Length: 531
Image (cartoon, rainbow, N blue to C red):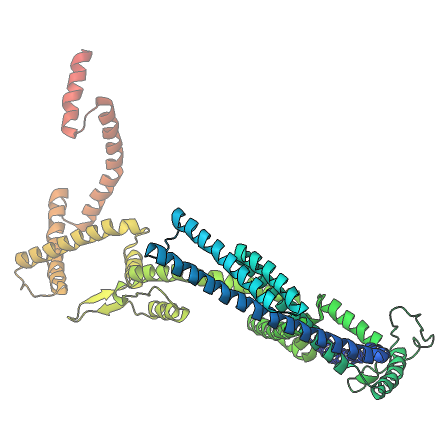
């Protein structure tokens, strides 16, 4: 950016120098125009002739004006005579017909023509009378001209009036043209320089020639005179020394500026530079924005941030494409997460409805991360039991799961599907136990509110009494009085009964019977069959 700033500063300096140079060239052009005007001073000798020509044209213009006045007077006189003639003609016609002439009437027009012919004869006779009364020759010439003229006027008065009007308009145009020529000559005579001006211009021309030689500028049509040592000279390009910089170098700088700005018109240089300034400001804003985004993306990378803090100048002037690509990828992932935030909110709402419906977790249409975190915290830190206003409890799913697991552990249920049968079994057994206890209470004559231990003690006493009676029954069954005899009889039974049980099982299989009382009839049947 500093390079671009420096370059733009140089371009501005070149632009200002170019403007100053253009102003100098305009002044030089004015001086050249004054040089050309000096050449007109050579025509100073013709000034008198121009004055004479102007005087002649003025005199000619005056004559034309006099002639124009004479023609106007003559035309007016003829028009008045024509009016008088027409008036007399109408008066005579009215005396004859006692009415005025009608337009486009053949008889009236013929009568008017006859009256006109008589009027012509009368006027010609009047002229002859005047001629005879006069003795001068000039009067004779005038009489002839007037007689001929009156004859033509009476026959073609309208055409003559038109011709005079045309001549009058031509004369007016000519007078106007001569007046314009007169004004131009006056202006030309007044604009010609004096001898003192010519000498001043000669001195300026010499100075300009020296200045052109310094700036290596040749006049068109003359031989170029170049300084062979000019290329070796080094000119200062500072803005303060712009007046001493040659014109060709200024032009070269202007061409370079126009080339860099990609324009073919110097008027577009300033707008282009202004556009570059605006783009530079925008670029700086975008650069700062990119830096902020990169720092935001890489704020978790402590080592990288420490490494960048060691070289702040590089961090300030450059932005690597790798970091920008990483930032774009991270921002894209953030955008995807932001787009899926609505789906996450829906999932959290469903989870809350399923796990803890009493919490009534409802996220709006525009959920935020903080709202989602708050909802999840409610789900995590919830004790699992909610109470209504009436004090009724609603356990959570986790509490129910722990209860089920505890039930499986206590009652040795391996699967969840076996919980319900086991619970039914336990319930039925518990009911049986309660029934047995109630029955024992009734049989033993105990109170309904006595404990189970009392029932057990009572049953124990009964069992001990029964055992005592059982020993007496055994002695009666085994037909022995002493305990040793009972034991001996039991040992005999133990040695005899297994063999007897095996023989009876085989007989059940062979005889295909189910009870012991069926064995003897089956044996008898076989014996009968055998006999």
